[in-house]
Amino acid sequence: VATSKAKGETFWECKMDTSAVVMADKDVDIRDLKRQKIKTHMRGFEKRQREKSLPTFLHFGTEMHLGFNRHICPVNSLKWNPDSCTYASLDEKSIYVWEPLHGVELFKANFFETSKTHAVSCFTYTSKHRLYLVFSTKFQLLIFSEYLEFHKALSLEIRSVNFAEFHEESSQIVTGGVDGVHVLGFHVGSKYDGKKAEMLDQEKSKLKG
Image (tube, rainbow, N blue to C red; front, side, top):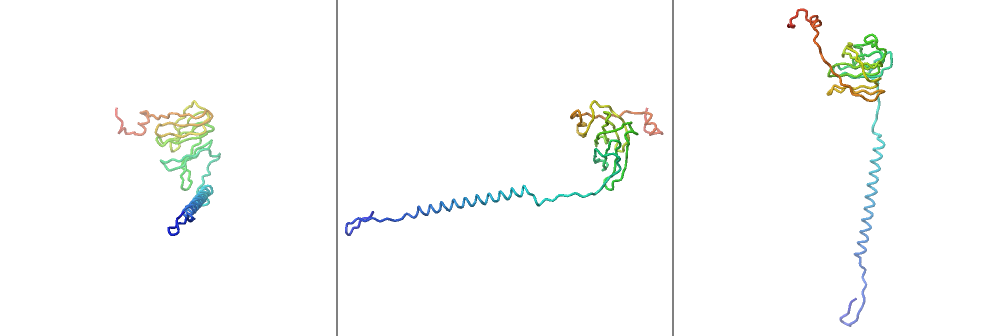
């Protein structure tokens, strides 16, 4: 409303408030930008999910490098010996030690010839004592050196063992089989044998008393 000083008349003037329109336009623009950002974010998220679920850039394959086929029966266990850098493989009748470069057999032990055992189930290796520990189906533990020299057979209180692993720090054998999982303490002692010492040192240069 405005009043004319010259004629003392009152007149009305109507002006459009463009600020509200400008603000409304800005609100529309902001909403559009937000929608666009959300869509862009969703497209990026979907792309990342597709890349995770479909790793087309990964390729897998195998090729034959070496074979060791001296076993007559199926192999049921295999161990790596880090001390001699050799493999030891086991079937129910025999155990073999062979080198990994050319698959050459180094040592072999037949269980019936060495310990009158007809069949074994699994084995493990201890680097601490440098021994192969073989579990027989007669519920015995057969002890072999890393050169497959037979030492002794120990009777066990557990039945057939299907899996065995030696824990070096605690000197324990962890087994799994028909009776469940068991932990066996393994101890190695030495006893002085005078006759054997005399045979090894016939001049007696190191024997006293």
